[in-house]
Length: 105
Image (cartoon, rainbow, N blue to C red; front, side):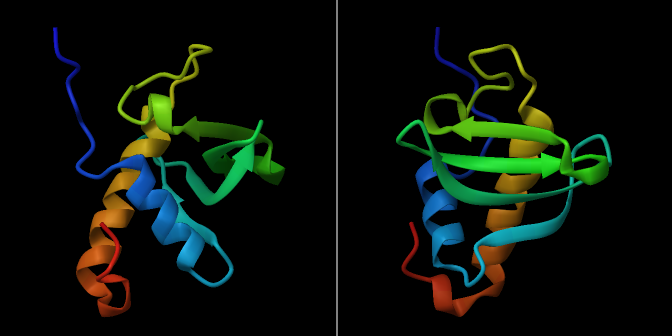
């Protein structure tokens, strides 16, 4: 059975765009539950990852790897959809509003 895809954009496209933005830290996003968070494109265990951080004193760390981008939970059972969905929406809005990123696919 094919996996239901709920993101419009690929992990690779989002990661590549964030790496091109000066400062590389995207803030002022909200989870699907309304919690503010920021995210960045970085590496963990030698793999590309989107690192999202929220909560008081930035104590909630979520790591979204390419192999779980289209899943709602990661390999450890952590719900990542609350973060990956707004990140995907941010990417779509950024692509539409910025001519300087037209080469990102």
